[in-house]
Structures are given as structure tokens and as C-alpha cells.
Image 1 (cartoon, rainbow, N blue to C red):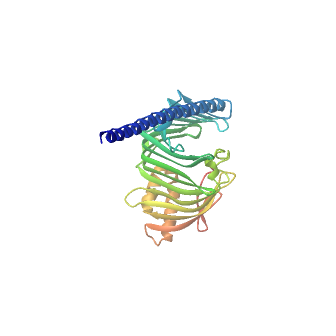
Image 2 (cartoon, rainbow, N blue to C red):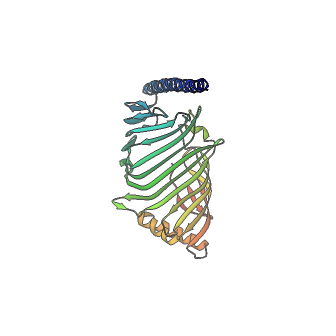
Image 3 (cartoon, rainbow, N blue to C red):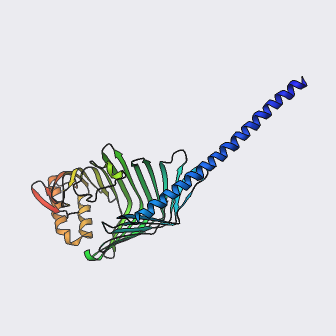
Length: 335
């Protein structure tokens, strides 16, 4: 009986020993595999960044490192830079942190610190900072499948001296989402509490949201990237472009639109507007030079709605000229 008991105990002990050995071996192999993969990733990124310096589109990542052991893997940079020579665009950002689960490396979470500086020749400049900016990407072998970015406490200024433009920008929260949809690209974005400062005057905040599907644009998310002439020649279905002043004062546009090769906009849009008088007064206050036009347009829309402060009308846009019925009411400058 004692011999049988000792044999049973011995069998259990051997199993525990083999289990411990298996765990140690697996841990060693996993650790070696993780650091090997991290080293390969760092070397590949370093080579790609170095090669980009000699091309027309370059990127930089100072003090590049790969971290996250044991269950994550991610790229870290003390600062990030982008230089697109054909467009004359350059940008710099603060620290970048990213992480993906080892078992799902195509899905990454990214945090990016400010401040950011964006420059476009000859003198377009955007300086912006934020409290928190976080992005999520899902990638396949041919590029991104979808991406999202959200930020809080955005503050910045846009300057273009040659255009006499200086605009302060602030938003309490913002989001942008991109997703392939067959051959098309779905884009949705929103800004909450968007406040603009023009000519030293801070405008009351409002909410802005857009939801659009761009035809034949899924490839923009692939490794080949968007075409150089974007957005010229682009067709899209604008599901909703909405502005909300609060207290039920909203304006929504929807319908098909197209950007011509010359940058002019064309399309047929449904306009739903609540609070016509409030919108007239806001436009007149922000753009005094357009006060007469705002009054004329508001009167025309009210006339079509039987004098009510709410209306649903159709706008026809032909190469940048906006028509309400047969009458031209506004001009949209080329993009």
C-alpha cells in the first residue's frame, strides 16, 4: 500500500517537473521570439526612415525604440516629423507611443503628444496643441483597413499672411473615422464646442459634424496612398454636413457632390435649416461684408417656407455658384 502511494506521488511529481520544464522552455522561446521580432521591426523601420530621407516624401522618428514586452509590442519616438516635398508640406509633432497586442499586431493604439507645427509653402502655418490625442488603426498587408482619431482640449492658430488670414481654433472634443467600404471610403468627423477667433473676436462655440462616402477612394488607405491631385476630380455622397448653434438652431446639408479638375464644387444638395433668423444674424456678425447676402438668402428661404423660421430647400451648385431655384445666391471659391 505504501509502495503504491509512493509510486503515485512520484508520477505526479514527474508531471509537475515536466510541466515546469515546458513552461520554462516556452517562456524562453517566447522571450527570444519577442525580442527577435522587436529587433527586426526596429531595423526595418530605421531602414525605411533612412531611405525616405532621399525621396520626395520623408518621415523621421527621433530615438526610435520598440517596447511592450511581454504581451504587447509598439513603436516609441521622442518626436515625429514629416516632410512632403512635392506639396511643400512639413510637420513636426511631440512624443509618439504605440502598442499592439502580440496576438493581434495589425490593430494598434497610438498616442501622440503636442505641440504640432504644420507648414505649407509659401506661408501657410498651423500651430496646434491638445490635452490628449489617441488613434486606433487596423492594418492589413496592403495598408490600412480603418482608422480613428479622437482628441480633447484642442487649441491652435492658423496663419496665412499672404491671404491676410489669421484664425484661432479651439475645440473641447473632436473625432475622425476612416473606413474602407468596398471601393469607396467612408469618412466621418465631428468637432464639439468649436470656437473660432477672427480679427481678435472670439465667436460663440458651435458643433460641427460631417459624414461622407468618397467614391473610388478606398485605395487612398492602401500603401500607394492618395493621389497627388486630391481632392480634384473627386465624387462623393454627402450623407450629412451639420452645424449646431445650440437651442435647436441647426443646419444640415446632404446630397451628391463633385470637385472638378479646377477645384470648383458642383452638386445637388438638400438643405434643412432650423432657426433661419439666428443663422442670418450669426453669418452677418461673423462676416460683416456678407451681411447683405445673408439677409437676401434668409429672406428667400423664408419665402419658400411660407415665412416660417424652419425650411427644407434644394440647392443646386454649378461650378461653385449656388442656386436657390433659378436664382444664384452665393459663390463657393475653388478649393
